[in-house]
Length: 79
Image (cartoon, rainbow, N blue to C red; front, side, top):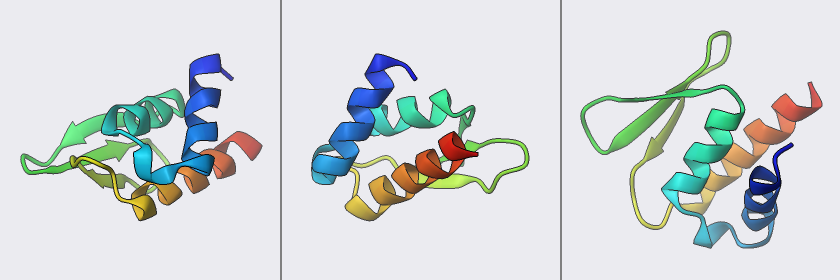
């Protein structure tokens, strides 16, 4: 795992309310998701064979979205 991604994951675990959209994007892109937009404030990350992940482009990212990305990371890294 890249050092940058490992630092973001640690930050997600320890301080989920301080995560930026760019950090969420970096983790999902690392996992192979591609960013697309529905033309609104929500950004959709897609990966073949997986459910898409919908993240509102907001500051800060709400904790439950950070938790979802962290769960996705943990599931995919273990698999």
